[in-house]
Length: 195
Length: 308
Ligand code: SF4
Ligand code: SF4
Image 1 (cartoon, rainbow over the protein chains, first blue to last red):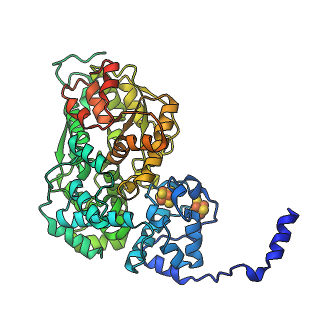
Image 2: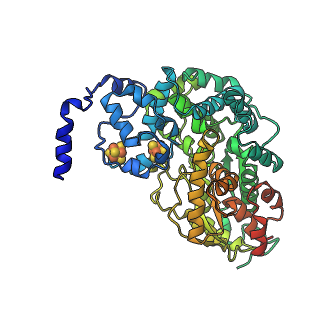
Image 3: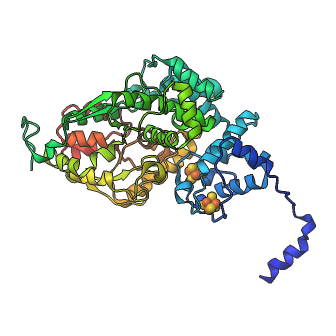
């Protein structure tokens, strides 16, 4: 106990990084439709149950704190915002009802809008390919989706064996289906402001 | 106990509630990699005298991607389908857990958010329609009358089949959307499976995440989650998984071999859709086409239990 106290004294407060909280980032978040995060009291319940936490650079509760502190660059460049699988475990268990999955959504949206290079480029490219597929057909045809994704990532051979097995078992359909009223679908995506 | 072949429907108390008309939203997966989920759901409903009318010209719900880019689109994409559903005027069966979750969340947002209501009117030229009830498959099948009906119609009981029911995320969460009370330890699929003669195996990973749409971008992460689920299912003493979600089934079934290789394991657990097992137990004769689509071949296990 006393050892750790003396080591803190040895470092000296002037060597610790001092972070001036910057509320402008939170303001931008709210404008992007992020829910309030001020009720968070850092209990870590979200992070202890997060199934993707093991792969994230910052855990969900840390992301919340970082947003509150205004660490915009660090948050937008984090892998956590892309690895969140929107499993809804955190918000279900949070004692304060903090809607973390919606916070992650707003963060991804700001990152894309401001051209921040995603820490998980493949995941971002998957989402892009998925949205292109909806824009094109109104429905998602998995084989075309995989084709789009492979063109974007140039990972032609990743999971090629699995793709072949899926194809042989008839799990990948040949013919894409198209929605008749595709104009409406496109107008939804345009009005929404999606890229 | 056994259901007589050729017995006419409507002659038992349990049959009465069954002559039912539902709208049907298959979603993209059920017209693609999860076609056996679509086929088995249709086959099962036909056997239960539930008539399905597919939503006319339905479009993608936006799934795991729309909300990551654009909140309005993630509401308006399902809203288009909800508008079609309102016209058809029946409760909607949505077997895909992701479509169900996204559509139900959109319905809730539209009912509560005046800003979205305004955007809806702009986009669709009418007010937000009255909410139609949305149903997922475990919800439909675990209704007490339906469980009774299933029991009465079982012709090939799933005796001796030990399986864990795996719900994943969006059938249960968030409870503010799904309105489910028992969201951490649901029992709906267990009730259905038991009614079919099967032995549900208790385990604590029912509502864990399979990694969902991360599978293309980060298959290594999905392998890790799949590995944990398979180990836990095996340790609980299960021989198979039962699912009601194309993502869950897809990840567990299609990534299982890679996950086993990556972590040096030898599990091999077939991953069934609940509709496949229910239709099989009710005597559906042409299930072979479904089993062929599974990457973890379920036929040896079914043969062992005298179900093939
Ligand atoms: S569970 Fe809620 S209150 Fe607790 S740390 Fe996470 S967001 Fe904050
Ligand atoms: S929704 Fe995202 S942050 Fe929350 S528990 Fe799931 S993966 Fe973690």
